Amino acid sequence: MAEVTFAEELKQVPKSTKSTFLRSHQLKYDGLLVLVTLIWGSTFLVVKETLKLTGPFTYLALSYSVGTLALALIFHKRLLRITRLEVKSGLTIGIFLFAGYALQTTGIQYTTVSKAGFIT
Image 1 (cartoon, one colour):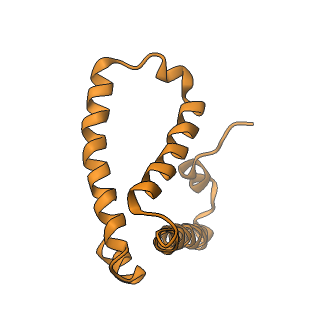
Image 2 (image 1 turned 60 degrees about the vertical axis):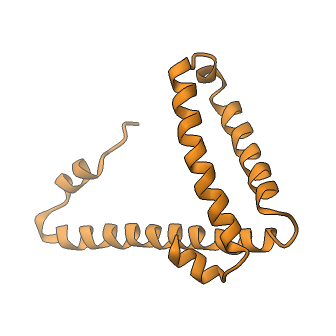
């Protein structure tokens, strides 16, 4: 079955019900944004609680090792074709990303979850 795009679906809706159709889709997408926000915000609480058990660098090493392993398993064929430029670019970006996460994770230890979520 062919996938119908939102624009194609909208063309099929009679003009008399278009505003209701758009409103129902708007509510659905707004709800998804709220859900993503809740998930994103809850990660600060999870990190704060995890940091009671381990240090920030251990936490980052473990969590990103799991993520790296998962992505390597998913994209293993693509990794075999990686170029030297991609490795160099990835390392450069990775250094800045690591610095940001290290500062954020260390900072969460010294402030409240709500302040950390608001600042970042």
